[in-house]
Image 1 (cartoon, rainbow, N blue to C red):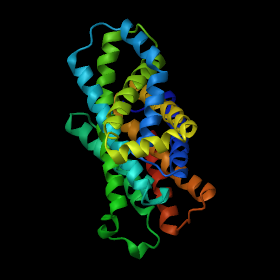
Image 2 (image 1 turned 90 degrees about the vertical axis):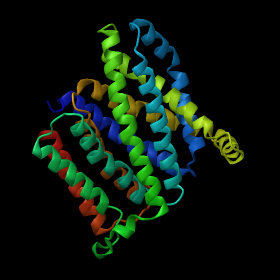
Image 3 (image 1 turned 180 degrees about the vertical axis):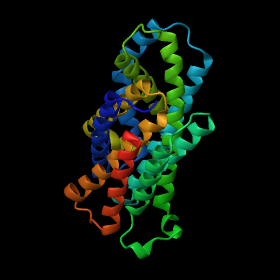
Length: 300
């Protein structure tokens, strides 16, 4: 089974929102504390829905709660890595790496778990990955593995690994939640109820990381920009809520993760247009390969 038109449409809308909140985050000096406020604001907002969804479910297994904790932990890894990478480099470098690598990593993980992908889907994911690795280059002759052995690329890689972790954990947790609910609530209610739980747990993990003196200072600074933090959180919540809903409609999560990468050309385009970041030929070719790979994955 591939991905339905409805699920694909939800993921495409989320891609626009994802590129948007990354621009908002980059417009300030991002920090883990900033994303802590963003995620906690969404978690607190959705807390009543979380409790209501849980009251409609049968007894949830311990594995569900463990996966929820694991998902929140990896979401913390993703947010922290993204913030530290954005402190050191432009969106044009960080965003493609953080978004590209999860495509093949999630595909490999799902394949190891026994799910079969058609060859065209693998080709599409490979094109997406190659394209995203081209985007940070200024000249074609610049390409070398050493280009990516830098602190900003390392933190982008950390963010990518965080994406893989929470994507797989969320898919497993949603399966347990769907079974426990047994149709008692609609898929959107289930998705956003789980989203509230996941963001609340992620915010608590991030808050633990702000207990140091430097972290407390960042938290106070971020509270001074509370409106932007809450707005970013709302966009993040809407973005991932749509993705979770698409996951609930799709058997193989790797299709959803791949299609989400449309946010890469959108993010690069917005960065060039709104932030005045330079555009180079390797970057434009990379964006083209990403689009070609997305078409292969979606229509295989």
